[in-house]
Each structure stands twice: as structure tokens, then as C-alpha cells.
Image: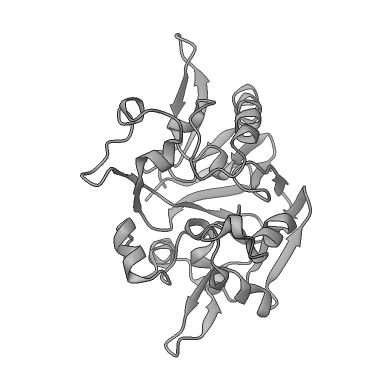
Length: 286
């Protein structure tokens, strides 16, 4: 279990929504294997280990969550392809923190791909789809919702309606436009890039800040400008945005939260002697 991170009056805890194994070429796009395999060792099927780092957020008045991992609804052949963990890994890991699904007040979905939104719903014993977090308001960008539900042929296979339409049916979905404050100290901003409606999350309290850039910077290896995902719908947008986001994080001493790094879910970025970025984790478990 990762350590709690304190931002003034806000506390953050990266929580696994389940590990999986994804084709290394898909995770690193145009980067040659001879380079990416130095930071992510592939298995015999050319897959690398990837985490789904969700973030538990405790404010003075609420308990929230960023993203939900992949959940339990995927077909068996998909689960085998990615070597997904059985059951509901996010709920297991939240339970270890003493958190039950009904404790969550709000939930931000950075975007609606299965590895971020799949855990937002589940099938009950009768096969009925239900929200995993029965009290939570779920926040998603309007553009992301439009694309995810638009059944566009060019996005076939990118979205699964069972992951998020039940949230609308249950009256738990809130669609935002561009920038929005979710609760005091927690806001979202439309970035695009990975998807047209992708959003990042910014958290702050007193003089402390953290940023969850979602799949714009999924792992520490992706801090490099051209190390982007093959899944990115708008890769040139990612290449333009990422250096700006990272510059702000470094210059303003903000914590970065990685959505998919299996060993470093969060860290502070500093420039080393050679000019490259180095990551430190100066907080301790409690």
C-alpha cells in the first residue's frame, strides 16, 4: 500500500484498481523497443506490467476518488489477454484502508476508457448493472461523454457503455465543461490529447499542490515529450501539452500522480545534474 500524502488539509492515497499486462508497443507508441524495454521489461508475449493507480482524496468535508480501474465486468478472454486480477481489486484495496463503497461522496473520471472507468459499475448477483459507489456524484467532461456514447465508427472498441451509462440511469452522473471545481481544493481541467474529452485533476490546500495528469503522463518513463501512448487519439496535442504541464509541476514544486506506473504512483520532480528529471517521494507511511 502506498503512503498517504498530505497537502495542507487534504490527504491523498494512491490505491490500486488492479494490475494488468499490456503490449509494450501500445504503451510507448513510436518509441523503439530497444529503448522502452530498458525501463519496462516485457514478458514472453511482449507485454509490460501496468498499474491502474486510482487516488483516494480526503478533504475536511468529503471523501472522493479519482478513477476506478478496470472492475470485474470484462469478458474472460479479455481478462486473460491482459492478465487482469480477479474480482473487484479496487474495492479490496479500499477495504484495506477502511473505506467502503458507500463512503465515497464524489468520483472524478479522467476519461472513459475501460481501465479508468470500468470499476465504476458492476453486475449484481442477478446480472443487473449497478453503480459501484452508490452515493457518489461522478464527474466527466461533456466532450468525453459525447464521444463515449456517440458510437462513432472510428472509436469502435474504445469505450464500453456498461462502464458508465448506468451512472446516468442512476442519476449519479454530472457532466462538466472545460474547467470546474468539484469540491473546495479539487478541480478538473479539460486537456484533450489522449481523448478529446480527457481531463486532468488539480488538488491544492494551503501552499501545497498535486496534479493527476491522467494518461498524458501515465508513467515516469512518459515524462519525455515523445514517449506517448499508441492509444492517444491526438498525439500531437499530447506532445504540445505535456512539456507545459511538467514545467509547471517542476517549477511550482507540485506533486505528480501517475495513472499507470507500477512502482511509483506519485513523486516530486527535480532536475538532476545532467538536466534530466529525477523523482523523489519525501513522504512517509502512517
